[in-house]
Image 1 (tube, one colour):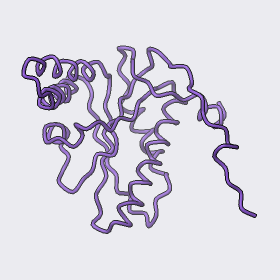
Image 2: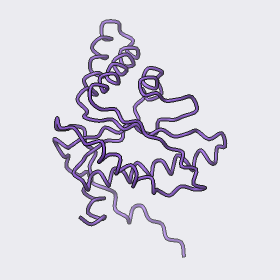
Image 3: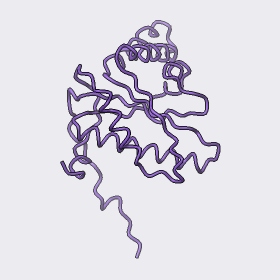
Image 4: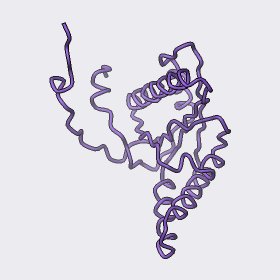
Length: 186
């Protein structure tokens, strides 16, 4: 498959088959992904893979977060269960964690580099028939979620990647034409 085709055909996947993704495949994809552009070679990232029964720990952290967000006491349990259900069937989570450099300019460059790394991973995974969605939901900032993953103070979760073999591939959504987006200055 050509890179252009992979870029255009890649989709964010929300529903996965109940088939585990081999850890060695993910490790290989992550290793290649680290070749993302990275100003000053800070390489600020690290990865936390959650698979197997450990996924339920994240689902429980999500339950606590979602029920805590709900103001109506009668809806708390339902909200928590919705959050739990959303995560319990994801075959694998890959949390991409970044050191938060105290220098704002370096931190911004590191965030851009980490985002490029996630895009690399997404495209490499798609090439292997593996789908994912890059999530940045509010709970990545919660104490429960951070503790469940072992994220340290001074680190930022840039993405919680839900990874697995696609059960359903969404149809593409239209993009704006380049004519609408391009300004040329001569």
